[in-house]
Each structure stands twice: as C-alpha cells, then as structure tokens.
Length: 131
Length: 170
Image (cartoon, rainbow over the protein chains, first blue to last red):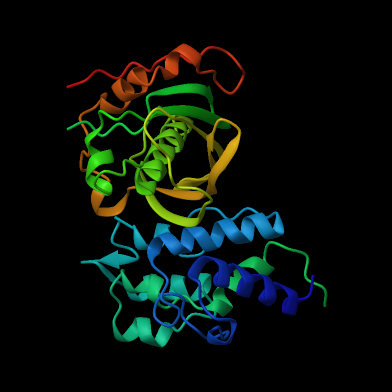
C-alpha cells in the first residue's frame, strides 16, 4: 500500500467517526482540537481502521497510555510529564506537536496533540508500505 | 423504578452473539407519556434494550470485570418506529470487536420478520477516574443476567453451558 492510500483510509475513518467534511482534514489537524474528536471517538476511529484494513491496533498504541499512567515518577510527576516523559512521547509520537506539550506538559494534554499525521504514521507501521 | 428494557435473553453465545425479546405492554407507563392517547414504544428505549443485550454480552466476554457503558451510537437507522402494545420485539446483537478499552457490536431490531432498526453500538470500559468507583454493588450485573435468564440459555466460547461466576452481592 502506498502512503497516499493510507492517508485516504485515515480520512475515510475520520469522516465516518467524526462526521467532518473531507476538506476539514489536513495532515497537521489535531484530532481533538481541530476535528472535535472526543475520547470515545478515538476508539471509533481505531475500530474503523481495523475493519477497513484488517489490522489490529492495541490499546495505548495511538496514545502511549503506559507513559501517561506511569506511577513510578519516571515519566510523570504531579500529573505533569517529566523531561524523560516528554522525550518518550516524542519518540512514540514522532509527528505530534511536542512544542505545545513542552509549554504545558500536563498528562491530559498528550491526547490533544495527536494529529492526522500521527494516525497515518501508526497505520503505516501496520501495513506493507510500497516505496 | 426498574431499568429493564428487555424481558428475556433467548440466545447468548459468549464472545459472539446474543438475542433478546421485549414484550410491549399497555401497562407500561412510558407508552402513555410519549404521545398521549397514541401509545408507541419510544425509539430511545428500543436502543436501550439493545444496549442492555449487547452490554451484558461484552461484560461476560471480558470476564465480568469491566464497567461497561454505552458510549457512542456511531451508526443507527430506524426503519419503522411505531411499535405498539401487544407486539414483541426481538433484538439481535453481534460483537464485532472486544478490546481492552471497550467494544463494538452490530445490532438489529425485528418485529417478527420485519427489520425495524439496524446499527452499531460502541461501549467503553470505564477506567481513569472511574476505575476505582463502584457503579453498582458487586453481583448486581450477575443478578440482572439471572433475571434475563442468560444462564438458562447461555453457552461459553466452546459451546458448553455458561456457568454463573462466583460473585456475591454485597
């Protein structure tokens, strides 16, 4: 599958799950801020993609919940991401707007920086991408 | 007030599908409150009955451990909503996805062979701030399954009779 096709599938899933217009969706759009997704919509988007592409997306793959729920104080302290936590998020969500997260590193903000491009990146890791 | 929107579960195949029936009676108050002198079953309560059927199937599929709540109705079409007293509805549900964070079921409602509604329901397992809170007393959901006679008809994933779990009501 080509990357353009992945993007088309992701767009289709977003249109289905969020009832947004195709022209509202840009690679850099954030799911929650720009496209109005709520937490449960993320589950809907994941389900749509699994159904469309026959892939399996486990809990926490899209938004690294193990980082967000860290109780050891390594990644999270007082509900805020530590420097290590931000570095880990950067590694796991390479296209996300980390600058925004650095400005306000509250754990709850991890979800809000998730973009359409992140979604494509995650799907690309699950399918064979043609060069 | 009881919040039971089905009368009996007639098919319960663990991790797969279930069917239930709802007998609509003129004695039910909600029929008189919806449209005075025109007793019809509110469509929202048809959805509630379907959700109870699918929600219990998901609850059992996850080992009776999760707090299952109806979280979204992504797709749902009602073809005919004039369900009247004396009629019997059959709800059919099929689990499409069972995940750590929730599940999705395809659902249908029939009046005899007439398709009244079809769609998809999405359930979430309450976690986060709700993870440690009790929505119901332990055993309430199992009691509900007994009331709906799930354990009379239910089979597990291998086709063997479904045994009620040992969860005591507090």
